Length: 500
Image (cartoon, rainbow, N blue to C red; front, side, top):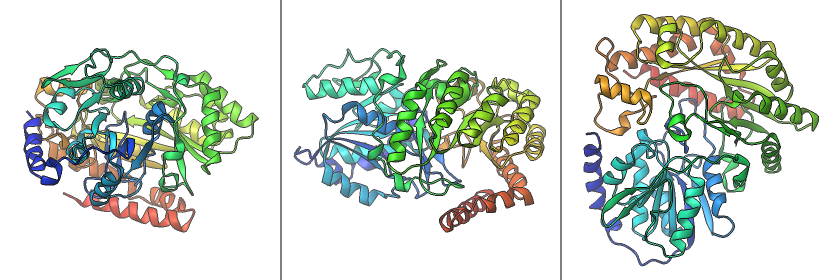
């Protein structure tokens, strides 16, 4: 089992005397929310319902979901949020900060490709007697393995964390020692692991408090092609599509729950007050509720709220009326999950789209002046060298401004994961191998993991190293700062495609 390899690294950490010797419990902070330091100095994308990956495009991911979780106990509790990725904060500086803060409680992001790294936070916090809490798309399905492998982790909150977190803190503060009544919680009782019943989804998203945007290092959040700062506004949770590889269904299932347009406008106004005018509407599928998108776009136009914004979509959840209003209200780019140019591979994924829908949607987007960012996956079930070549040809034929080619990963908890286990496709030694950027755990009888990695890199190389994409890339340098960022991104991609 993969978690046996994790235990060997834990034993080494436990031998570290500064962790074993617990300092007397004097807390300077009630709760510290942490996006842990990078494992290797690179930029990583992590969030409550993300899978975690290196960001070759150097996109700093705003910790808006973590700021929303913090809002559940504010202002009653003294809290801080540390985004080590945005701050480029290494472990030495983080250890010093932890010693200064000595939080009573600590909440950390955890993803499969960074799990050993992320769990180091709990080892360091144990020195101060801090209660440690993990959230995320990996610990939700893999709660048992995680709690067994990492004895310095006290609690896991599965699925939607807000209400469970608030109840847990209230009970801890009241001195309660039995947490059997808190839905969605995994905890330890007399050496036994207890997985409480699941908590139902929050029905009305507007019941959640507004994220504490002021806790975030806004000046650190950058993305290529955007001049100045940007941030996320979460608009909904859940997606009704049936893609078998998608981690979002592990966290939120197939229900879709949206904020109201009025609530979204409130958050935009707060961000503008903080000096942010570029926004990404953060959702599993932004255009899943047409009425919401139409009304939000109309309000932005009618109230003359000047922002530049981006979103994601599917090619079968869009139409020209919606695109025209989106463009008029400030939308300038859409990211599309296109995945493959092979109809057969798309059917295996249960993606529910086809070439005709893709071409129609991307052409309509271009018609209204909106840029297209396409995401593709190399190595899904049914993939062959021929279908990969088909995907490359398809990507090159589309009106795309940016394209990224990721390696297929059967993330724990997804239907794809269970298919891969049943068929013996998974080849791994540790959870860090579940990495869509650097490697693959997949090893099909007809397509090896080495072949999948090779073709993912070749796909990007064939798409990107052409005159039109190169020109688009250079044109996006709208300031000296973005030019420097783009050069860094270019070097990162050259290294990636050149790494055998």
